[in-house]
Image (cartoon, rainbow, N blue to C red; front, side):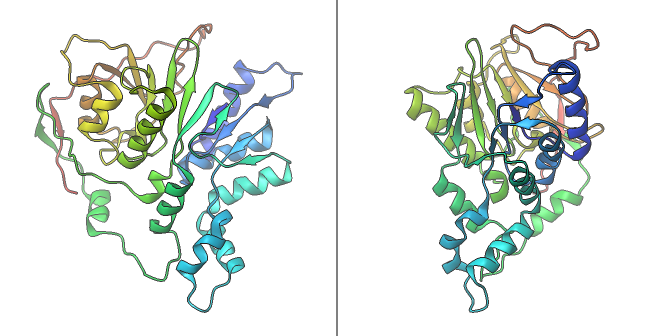
Amino acid sequence: MRYDGGFEVHGERLAEILNQYYFQPNEEKAIDAVFVSHSDKDHTSGLKIILENFKVKALYMNRPWLYADELYPKVNDGRKTVESLKRELKEKFVYIADLEEIALRKDIPVYEAFTGVKIESKLLILSPTKEQYKELFVASDKTPLQESRLDTKDSLISKIVKKVYNVIEDWNIETLKDDVTTSAENEMSIVLLGLMDDEKFLLTGDAGIEGLNSAMDSNRYYFRKSITGDIMFMQIPHHGGRHNVNPAVLNQLLGNNCGRETDREIVAFVSSVENSDHPYKMVVNAYLRRGAKVMRSGGNSILHRCEMPSRADYNTIESEKFNRYVEEWHD
């Protein structure tokens, strides 16, 4: 399976890895399932390479134009029709529209990806529900509603202010905020649980507190127990951004703050490009406090293996260290 694909350059690198390590020259290059967490370019563009060059058996992706009939009453200003709304949505969400076009051309079946969808007893989608997705879609800045919505000044400031690392944290001093939020598009992210025999994993895309809480509620519903301590490999959402997690969510995912020498044997990985200012240092600290090892890609390919052979050209990477100084809050 494949979950997200980064930009096109990452898709090209992924294709190289698949060809080198997973397929023989004369073997059918089949991928059982590809998942698109949400519509952002840095998650979708690379998947065009995968869909074009491999035999993908199933594409799991949520497409907002499928629900245009239900949204129409909210956008009807006397000039739009359902069909014009569908066209406008495909223009707004062009990156997943591109993937749909490839899938239709290559006869790749496309499935909805909502809570409860299970794939071969090994993968389970925990979030979002279809109703949550539609509600988030209505709230999205990309949705052409009658009422115009403006980006907040704070969100713009957060993009242009240079980070200043002069806030002191200690093992028992945490500066993550409780009341942070992320965009509706990010909250649409598919949260996917892997049900491996020896190790469960959790892929989160750019999900925020709403999506993560929904996922944990779903886990409790399906397995009749808390997710705490049950996940041994997890993705840190939104490349380690600080608007996607808070202390309460991390306590449920990982457990409470533990001693410096405690290792809960949890690996938390963060996907980030080379020379990026992500992940946020306060986010790294938050995972470390709760007994996780944090691994950062930094533009490199990372192999996390379970009962799989090592690769001769891969070296062991160092986990992230605790940061004494973290970022100021400007947003």
